[in-house]
Length: 280
Image 1 (spheres, rainbow, N blue to C red):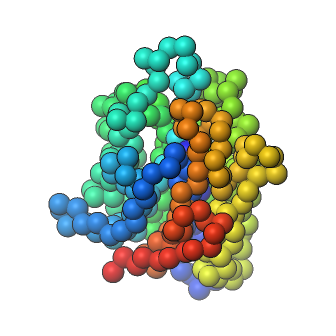
Image 2: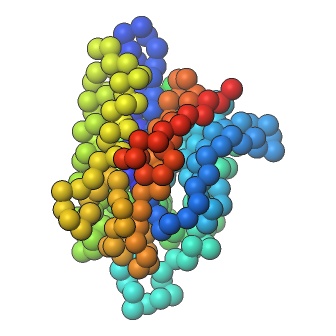
């Protein structure tokens, strides 16, 4: 589930701007947005789903932000029900919560995932996208207890749908995943590239956030909604999540790392009901 993206660059004043954004696409459930204080005192703004303990997307007081998207292949092997990961084994959001509680940089976040993933081989596969206040960006793909990651700090941006480029790309190739994910990834990456190139030319935070809201509200040209960033009842099992229930974009989130602000939509982003939370 979800379309994710991160971008960072230095503006004309020498200040670094950074943004992490995503949609949360899932079967209909409750979404929570709030402020959290970990046991060690680290504060974070976050968004989560009722059926998914932990943090789906968040930003901590150190300026480290993390999010994720579903990326698996086992749902296509419907004949072997034992191979399909169950939601009760979905600990990906717990990994994100652990990162926000204990890490301050992308490197620290990657080290935490290197420990967490092998310990949870039965969790749902996914992509974890991490960005920090110094412009570090990395994406880690994980599935069935294995992982592979790359850094995008020098490139300045990274976008992804529910697809893998390294770890399980071949296993996803004959499924609906590339058809649904690649158009969303392309749209996200084109947007991020434009932001990256125009931050030094004076593109403002307000303009970036407003344009991101439009991107995350984007529907598909196809009548079956395949490839839609904002989906309303997508019925393509295995595309964004296993199971036969329709998939909806329940919220969209845009994190402004420099100003420690989280913008989020109450319901579908296309409805335009956006709110903000600031991490004080």
